Image 1 (cartoon, rainbow, N blue to C red):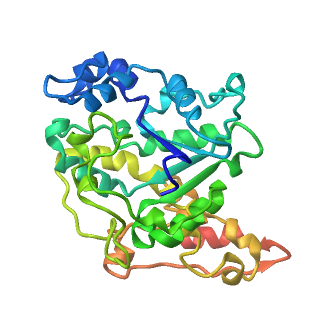
Image 2 (cartoon, rainbow, N blue to C red):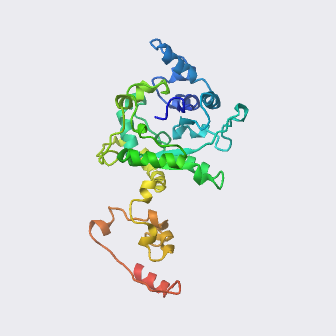
Image 3 (cartoon, rainbow, N blue to C red):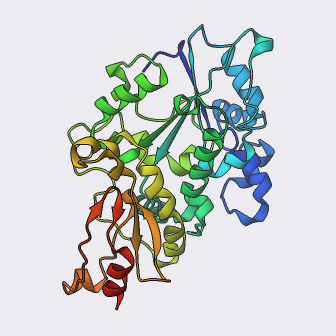
Length: 333
């Protein structure tokens, strides 16, 4: 969309090393070819070049690509969160010896783990339908966010968290906002692309990119798209879902779409300090304090299922609860 002379895309440059590190723990039909950089017998010349370029390190791929770009060019590097342990966030690649300055910015794409695992099940032939929380990628994504936030006081300016459902529902508005946050000029041509394979695709693309190759643009005005659709999930994937969901719920709250889902905080709370309340959920000795944004009651709780409830009203004077101990004893008696 920005033009071939202004942007270079790199597709999962750490994939090969990830397969090497994981060894026999990971099953992929192209595993040996990718590790060896060896194209299959029926590969075309262009496909063979794609297999061989996977032997290059991340640093070499970035430097090679940077030489193709003008000033203010964009180098888009797509990584999988599960590959992040191979990425050095403390010492990101520099282009000083090329007289180029790399300005690293991180865009974290968050997707509902139910949607991730539903798609995972549909591609079971590529991985034997075995999914760990690491493969789902949401827990590693939280680790990436933590690593970036730990670097500098300016880290808020280098990381953008995006909800994939927001992008699907309103691609034009969301892409415009993403470009603004990343310092890139938005163009409406970003809404369309040529169908079929692309030069930047990883050599494994034919195993995974069928739907993408069939498409030629975003489906506009499609409110039912995204994770809101009804999905099915193989029970064997439930453990990975349960492990991934807490990290997803934290990350989704960092997205623009989540923040703007209702009225601004200052219009909801009479006292702005109430926005950061800690809420006790549960009985004494078995409950816990939760941030207000994460507090909730299970839909299977008797208060929801049968309308059972017990409540206690307390007065606050000068910032202190009157007779708190007596109130709590009566509440839990």
